[in-house]
Length: 210
Image (cartoon, rainbow, N blue to C red; front, top):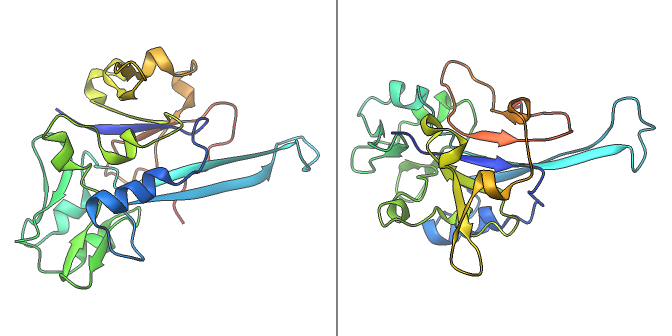
């Protein structure tokens, strides 16, 4: 079993609700984020004038990718960073010694040292909510219905999102605008195999991490 998030970048409006809701429910320290939202562009459309409306821009949320072959787990000397039963990557604070090897090993820069507790923290996929059958905060609070959670091993059919006004849970393939396999991207893979995916239609994917 694996758990991951797919984000439809054509629907993301950059409102930062996912980032702020995450900080609130998980008590993330000031100055740190479990979910960062990066603006891509505005950049000129190839062959266009370079002026509006011949430009494109989108927002790219970046968090722990809960990789299938996580480098952070490999380098952890105490096994504090580990793969949970649902495939997510978690940090056992009782075992963490704050060495930050995992911070240096992460290709996406999404881990940090909690200076007060002297332990490393990152996105947990709102593990406490998943265990109660609830959605991660970044999914449930996405006003644009851009974020969806499911099991990549079971295909796009498994991905669900927040609830509609009638109390029915939205299913990604029934709700989203059509997309092709070529519209699905991942952050750079250096052998860690990131589990998260991004949908981007009709624009240039610029998901490299500086």
